[in-house]
Image 1 (cartoon, rainbow over the protein chains, first blue to last red):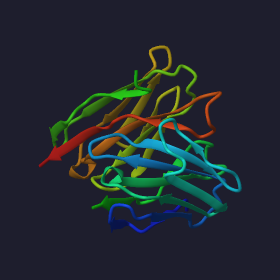
Image 2: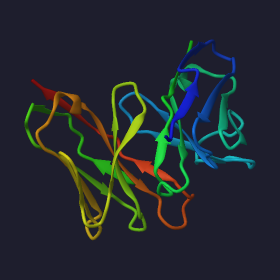
Image 3: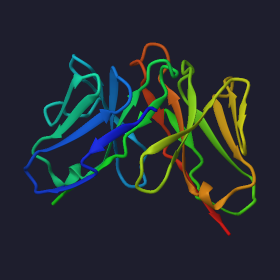
Image 4: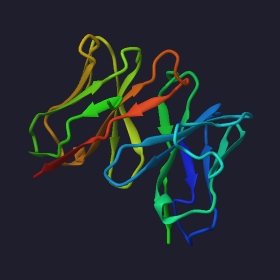
Length: 117
Length: 113
């Protein structure tokens, strides 16, 4: 149980285009999903917390108009990187919490590697 | 000051060795503590939660010292498959976003034959 999927697993796009990343909880309902970014040899940095049916809470320094998050259902959250630039190239990982498994144990998706050329 | 700080590593040890990782956290209100394992270019996977009394899972032993705000992970009889980056993770505690976790930068372990 507690499987989280992400799609796509990798994407290459041109500067100025937008990219949508999907995060799904496959065998449980996730009221809260988290979006992280990880640069090479760096720690995971939380970008935003996504709650189903409400607006995402963004961490300081993360532009909410650039990183659009939608958590439309209990099993799906999407992150759209708008007008991507090379500095947005990174490893984007989502996670979801499983109710009843310990309120803050998180299970991670396999990540999406974004390269902006 | 960073929320979670870890040994910089890397650690390079032979098979069968015992290796220990240390971690300190800054928020005394943190309530939950974890060790995650992350393989190269993969997502983190939960290795074990860390309880106040200390806990053991096979070759892995985790300890928590709340007074010193210090967490450790001991790996005995290292296997080649233990090679990975080990992330120390703590929650934000009361008053922070529910479920908010803070990650250390990770300590890289390489076990050689």
